[in-house]
Length: 423
Image (cartoon, rainbow, N blue to C red; front, side):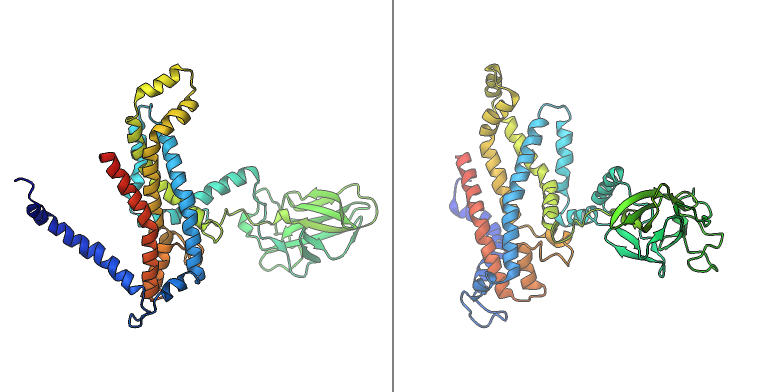
């Protein structure tokens, strides 16, 4: 059919019309719209662009985009390089890369929902906090009676160290310590009925029990109430701890060997601390690192695929020559593999930068509404200003134009590099 330009134009016309309708027209319209006010009737010049640099939310979005560009593409490229090199010689490398590439088959919206659940604060639902709590409790067990406290009216006052008695007790006194605020069903099974100890001649004694029986009188033992085993207690004199003991299965405790005198009784806070529930991953301080980690999980497969293809094209003679000359595997990696892969790594890195600058779905889905402002990025800010609560398409168009100007250099760089490689 020859090389007729007119015939080529006929075949290219449908694609040109689609590109004009879906790319060129929105781009030109956004540029024009960015110079008009909210209603689109009044020309405001550069006013919308000035507003974007004075709005706190937009400045936060700029800052977060910088963090994304600096951290995320480099992390994915480096991780992809390491995994591609490590799996190059193993038999199941293809299966491994396939598993890592699978997140790319899931939409970012669905991935965001998955990671919203993964980082849920409740350890019964969030996988990360479940693991963190498990490791924490392995080395630092939870308190025996979380949330328990002395009954109102008992002679104890809350202090930073725990609950300390308001008055002092003489040696030989028997002290009653009624506690509430703890489910009776969760009392340790070895607990027996609490009984009041007799006062000793020189020993400070007492009993700790769960004062929740139905029909009994408050702060008094009625014979059916259980003692609270393993409660730590301290004898305090002049602000210093001079004795420590632990309650038995019937709740009784004794401080043997205390010199004659007056002592305050303290229930250390360690008895009643609430269990460790993990970290607030979706809170203001951690939300951006959490979203970046989810994006790294999604995009690592993309980097491995490209870098593995580049590795397969490296001349094996160069690698073997380096090994014959006495280079270690690390030296071969640093001095031979990485320099030969530099063009591929650069293309992967630039492509990831373009992807990062347009990130939207993950931030929108993972970040709760209360912290979305802290996790804000330019694409999300553009959507919120244009179609969310802002409703100002003038400012939204200005943000879209600025986002395009940020992405365009990376796109031009990639296109030129592809053309040079093909020529």
